[in-house]
Length: 198
Image 1 (cartoon, rainbow, N blue to C red):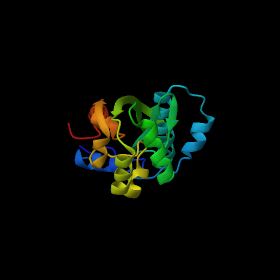
Image 2: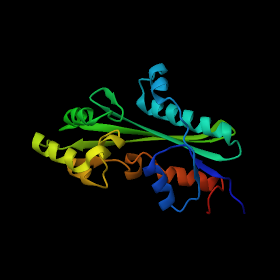
Image 3: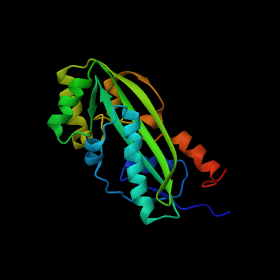
Image 4: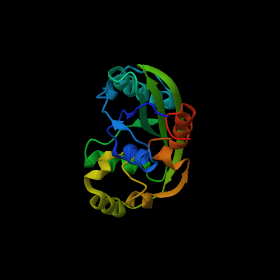
């Protein structure tokens, strides 16, 4: 049986790696969606909904170009103490963000959708709560020096699969959701649509 072509509408190396490790065959196409414009236009106070809206915009943009494919769109937003955070623009902003997260719980909101023929045919959202320990400024400087510019590739300024795990004292939530791709619900939906081997 032939399966629909799968496309990941994301330039995220982490999301692509997760799908590869799960054994999926897919193409990658960047959506080039203006995420800042969507965030600015949106009056959504519900950040889970905003994450879905961003994922939908990415999936629709790519699905319009490849209408017969199943297109996966995903996005993630971080919130802490009533404030919404994006990926840091530079090392100074990364340091300031980590100082805000230190000793607090922040939430990662992940949205994921499937599109076909420029229509959204499935959507799912999830979140995880992560508690950063109260680390010293000396440790913060050491951490930033250790990870370097990689700190700017993540909305939370860390990768749990690396030195970033040392920033935490408690994590509540699905590991794949934390990485920005709620993988188990996605795989379940792909199997239901006979888009992958069952």
